[in-house]
Amino acid sequence: MRQHFQNAAIAALVSVVLATSSWAQTALIDGTVTKVDTAASKITIKHGPIKKFDMDEGMTMVFTAKDKSLLDKVKAGDKIKFDADNVNGQFIVTAIEKAK
Image (cartoon, rainbow, N blue to C red; front, side, top):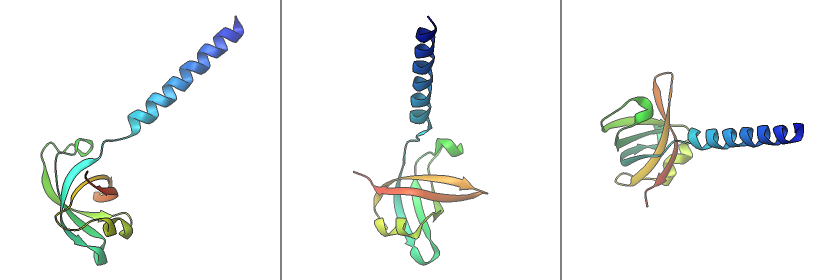
């Protein structure tokens, strides 16, 4: 009986961990690059709503790239998918890829 309880507890714990890790992944944000300033590590993106920042409407914003190498992947006019974080009030692009 004790072994059965331990197995059930382990199964429940594994389920919670797997569900939490999938839930923690956020959907990438759709956007269009309007300007890239590699020297300043800045990118201007016209994007749709960003729910995690409580932005219900799209707009054009300037973001700082977490790493300059992210900016080498795109140019003005490219349709993209990206992720960003708000660090001390500054929006930082943490991932970017061309939309398919």
